[in-house]
Image (tube, rainbow, N blue to C red):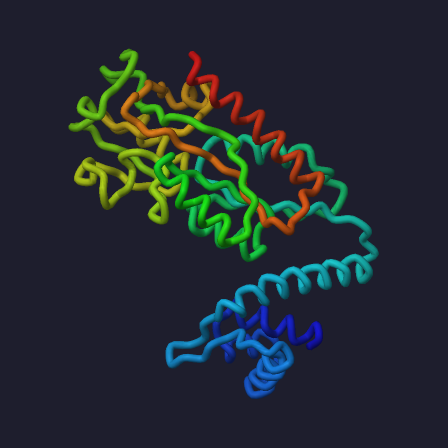
Length: 308
């Protein structure tokens, strides 16, 4: 086994195709197939399973490739340092749900970085399943997963199976967000019954429903809903579409005011959690620790809405 073999395997995983990987590596397909076979023989495991539909990865292969990606990344970083005379590069990556206080935190964090030094920051908003997979594979250093209290055991078991450390960073009962001009805006509390004729604006997480009444397939509001995949569109819809609402995680007062919205409690909603995850064999960097601090501060500002 050598570094080239590791790079070949990582490229095959990325493309899920021997021919495409060979093309990207500027080598012949037979030579790449032979190299992968030699690698598997030296390891004593099967990394890739060849089928009529293409390439799939075996359980042993997943574990091997997780380690291979890390080694290849470290080698490339070392090559970059000595080839270009660089002695330090700021690295940070995180996957989060689609939520405003995560955006606030990453903006604050990025503003602290030294822009005179090389920087590589990757921030991705996605669903729970992709976050867990990306962090477990080592594609992202940190992840935040959001789920309802009733999913707690399911996710704890998943984190254990994927060898992920987990820590709750926020617990909240979703509030109802709607226009300040709506008749329900001045209510102390809103019930699901009162929202029956309203249009629900959702940012769905199909892999694990994170907010009550927001699972597109199961919600009783499925025949009166708008599904969007970004925060700005959601807020604009609430601002402009009469009799529309959304169940929301903590969100800053200033942001609500900017869109002419307000937040009202809904006692029927289930407690939700935002949980920080990272691999158990991963050591937090100073950048990671700073982000977690900025995340905690952003959460505190957003939670102030709950105490208004």
